[in-house]
Length: 183
Image (cartoon, rainbow, N blue to C red; front, top):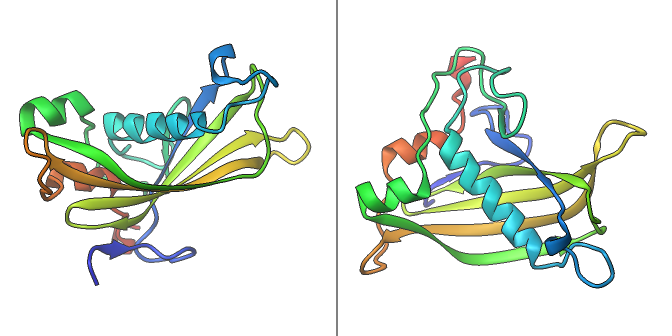
């Protein structure tokens, strides 16, 4: 098996996820006043980028507002983030999307605040497979209503030659699951 696969509902290791709120602006909508379908890919990209930038919080309650890591253990060590620009400039690497698949369930509209929830499905040597959901909070039950769900496969390559390269350990730690022994 290549990489680390995180199956849904798996208790050990513990899944790490990241939540990021995004407000829908006029520029995000089509003439019908709903979010243009391709913009969900932009929303997913923003959430992945902000996850990388923010790193992994140290405790379960760290970062409860904009951009938060959920599922981290209370005793987990904070992993500092890094920007895409730093990865390119300092490491000579970039992340490229190699595959996307998105299912659209319900529309979002102008001024809605959606929540993008990102999880790692597989953390490989040179690639990461993400599962991301765009949700809008429902006042009736407090749970999110699913707007769109996507699977995005990202690869790590050299900036200049676009050759596949191993994901640096400092980046892997941001996305890696929390080991059950740390619980």
